[in-house]
Length: 219
Image (cartoon, rainbow, N blue to C red; front, side, top):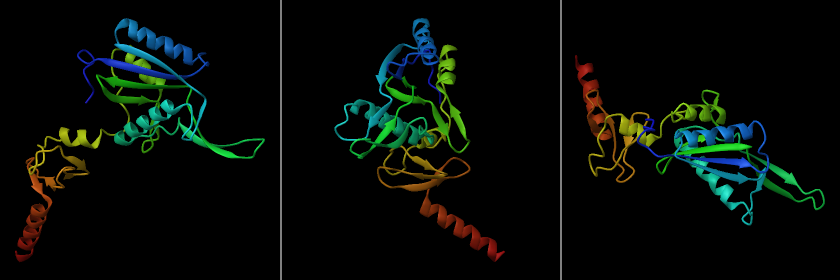
């Protein structure tokens, strides 16, 4: 569900390669600034990062790597991918011949927060649909007063909540929907939902199915 932009504080964090604040990146940044001045975005934070980051423990860009790790986590929950635009390659030192793994950073990346919740990272790709949601599209949506809705499916936890089911019958915790089979991460309860919306434990559902099958065979 898309948060109500009228009652939710929207924060946009724009990561951009420095010092490449040139067209078309500069145009996107200026549009984001206009979104902030017009109230479409409550807060705009600009962050710079390098063209590439060495994937070592002593990298001076640890904060950038932590950001990418946060983006990856969001993408996994949404069922989308941020690779590309982020991509890894091996760099070779022309003098020593040593090789190092580096992460190539995009010219611009936008992350959006509704209150304190990360709700979007742009650009990202829905690999199943072979479709990419660009930063241009996300910024254009913000300019119209809408919060961009990411590609892909909703997080599993959200899908379970929106299905109309209650919490776990055993412990009350939120259930995770795994393609119609609901699971409780707290106590391990497993079950399904009947046509009337009632939660039924998997064991009970199996017994019901076996009973119905046996009854059908006896007729």
